[in-house]
View 1 (tube, rainbow, N blue to C red):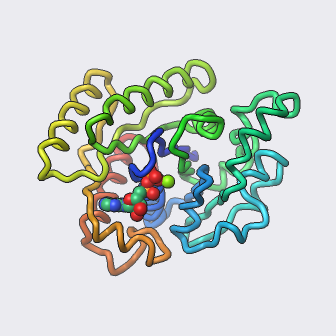
View 2: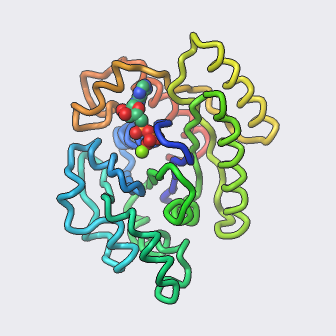
Length: 264
Ligand SMILES: Nc1ncnc2c1ncn2[C@@H]1O[C@H](COP(=O)(O)OP(=O)(O)O)[C@@H](O)[C@H]1O
Ligand SMILES: [Mg+2]
């Protein structure tokens, strides 16, 4: 059965996209058939696979607004990985849908209704999210089974994590009873910084209390890794030369931890 995992946080730059593409890389190497749905108009999923987001005839926007069959939009990018791309047009979704509610009477269910026919073609669907909680995120949370939250330990991060968890909880009650939090993963962590260590400890304690999983794996901050991301045309976990790289190993460990919880 296909499992649908959203990687979401209402903040930008916390490694949502990097986590989606690299987990997809690891899962694909385990023989899992993966679909990545890019739900962010910045198109960083396409860019991670070296595709020009402006070259697509149709994107997620056309599926959601004009009911284009997703099979015409999905692109096969590498062994076991397909992507469903987005581009700038997605930024018009909110305006288009919210000004035509008679045409879209259930605006949070567009993604779920349009993608459901291809779900069984995959073992895992990974949803990459925008850095806010608008209509697109509503569609993501209506469709997902699980949410993985990347958490960058900075001074005000706990506050936004608490907001995110409460939004997921509210959404679950109102729109998607099967929705659960898969867990929280520390990202861009510098273990030599007391601030990071302290905030991660505080976060772990808070999540334990709420019975939400905090993964043991953290994704370390690495300037070298960041500067290599743009050049490979593939997620780091799929680049052969990256064997034994710390960050790649972190994603492998994260995948193994996720496997302990769900069948991916
Ligand atoms: N381990 C890392 N350390 C430092 N920078 C990273 C790391 N992994 C990715 N980056 C860079 O951080 C930036 C933000 O990551 P991204 O995944 O795009 O975040 P988001 O999708 O949450 O906005 C990108 O430029 C990316 O290349
Ligand atoms: Mg992103």
